[in-house]
Image 1: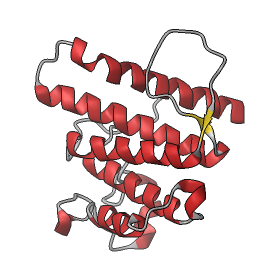
Image 2: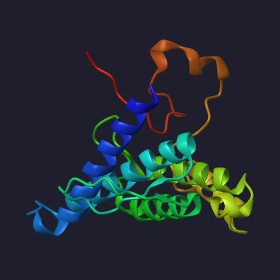
Image 3: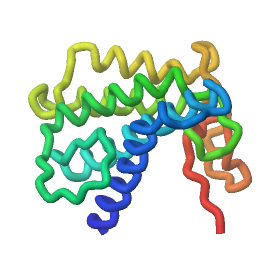
Length: 183
C-alpha cells in the first residue's frame, strides 16, 4: 500500500515539475491560462509533498523534472520539505482562479486552506523537526479565515450539520477541494 502511495505521489510531482520547467517554452492562449496551469502545478506538487512528508518524514525533494535514471536521491530534512510546500502554495494561491470552471481543480481557496493546514501541522511539532516559525499559527489563522466570504473567499459553514452527510449535497458550501471520481 505504501509503495503505491510513494509511486503515485512522486509520479504526480514529476509531472508537476515537468510542467513548471516547461512553462516558458509553451505557447499559451492567454496569460490567464498560463497562470492557472502554473498555479495548478505548484498546488499539486505541494499537495503531494505534504502527503509524502506526513507518511514518511525525510524524503527526496526534487523540484526539477528530468528524464535521467537516478539511484542516488538523498532524503531532505523535513524542514526543507515544509519550506518547499509553503513556497509552492504561496506561489499558487494568487495564480489560481477564485472558482474553477471544472470540479476537482484547485482554487485560491483550496490553496489557502491547504496552506493553513500546512502551517498548523508545521507549528504542531518541535521547532527542529518541521522547521516551525514563530508566525506559523498567525499564518494558519490568516489563510483559514481567507476562505470565508467576509474575507474574500467563497466558502461558508452549512447551517445544518446533518446536511454535510446527505449524499445529494456533495458540492455544498463547505467543500473546498474534492477529488472527482467517475466510472
